[in-house]
Image 1 (cartoon, rainbow, N blue to C red):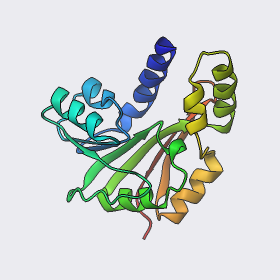
Image 2: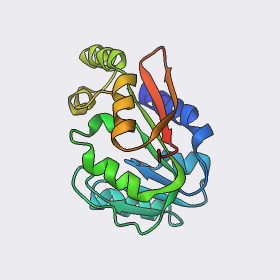
Image 3: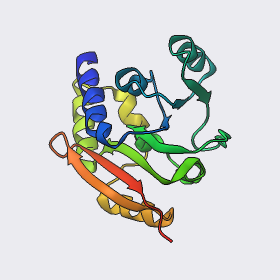
Image 4: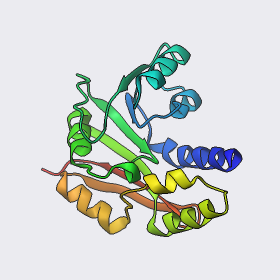
Length: 184
């Protein structure tokens, strides 16, 4: 399973990388793979759990990390970012309103939000693969909000953003969406 997960993480980062620049906020940063592989100069990661944050700060002393609940907490970062990334995160958020309000507060005027997430088809495949032990059953249970292109159009409109790019990858199992260019 680890080889498959490593492949998926690498593929997500590969598809998102061309859109990542400047000061970066990595929401749901996990082990901070993005920071480690791309070597971003100005990087802030948000993850859950004090122990996770302690380990990240120890491993990457030049980056900043914060423990936040994406559905409830204010980020209170007092800075703006050129790129905000959520790689395989949004599908775990049941109530995204707080998250998108906080993203909006952290985004530079010309900044962009870069997300990857399973498509409905991808989530279906993930569910089947979890039943035979190829992917995690826990991860499937944690997918509470699955997005398609139409749903991202609604998200963009609700939060006064435009879809700059929408693309499916991995045979239609995942999607990349880049939001930005706030509407007037």
